[in-house]
Image 1 (cartoon, rainbow, N blue to C red):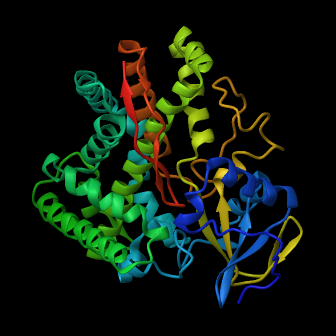
Image 2: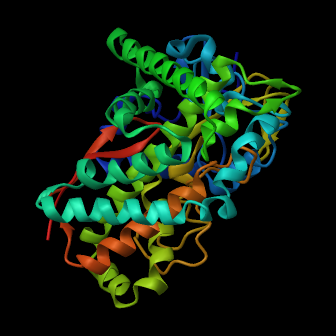
Image 3: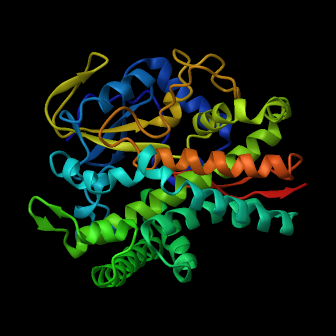
Length: 407
């Protein structure tokens, strides 16, 4: 059981209700935690709780020490095993430590590094062009449904080898999975369990196809790979597909929607971007990632007694790395609440800290966002959001469910 309780702070930032508060109240809560300059213990269940790490330096320190702060048995829920995932969670990179994590990640890492993605540049650019075509034909419309969902879905499915006929089901299953952190009711847990089963079934179908007819896609790589001298099991293949499709969809979807919202709310920054799109677009993408922080937190598990910022932690303690708070750290970012596309340097932690678990799809998310907005703002520089975004309430993901737009 965790120790070193600190009862001076109220709030429960692992539940959906916390994130439904006004943004300024959420920001104020994390500002109070940062001001304490130490890990703060927050209760979660009668028998245990977690330490909230909210400062940039704390999260960087913990990320660099996977030997002391592991991802097993779970990194995306406070429970030791996501209940709806059952045994299938064991094959997930998210909940895995070295050396198993190292070997498993190596199987697909090459496909998602910069050189590997150059192989897909034409496909991603073509998908971005077609999504912009469709968006501009439909405006005024919902930017999330018509653009933010579409581009990452088409790109990651093409890279992995998922057919277009599965797109709608992939979106539904992805949405269910991203709610796991805050899903406690039976209906929600049932939806997650169905999504896990769907991904396992889909991967089984794809695996049979690619064993017989190999193609230039990640599924072919997976079904012909060996780890520690053996092929991947069906459970491991299903977990791989799940993390690739969920991770490959959600971060980019959220970033695309947040960027339109932020550019609309900051017209001076949009004018600066449009004045020299090639020069300022990379900075605009990075600042959107920092300001919005699509991936809000991850859990790590203390493997042996240690300290963070001089504060003692015991083996077995749970810690939560709040990337959203680190990206507002006043010690690192000047005017942290401002949206500044010229911010440099911009050492945000939106893809996680410097660790073996740094987001596998970080390069893909940046590339998709850059190609999409280069296409969109060249052809429709006047596009803008026409109403505030409808945020999706999952502590794990800071997403936008709907965002009306027009030209």
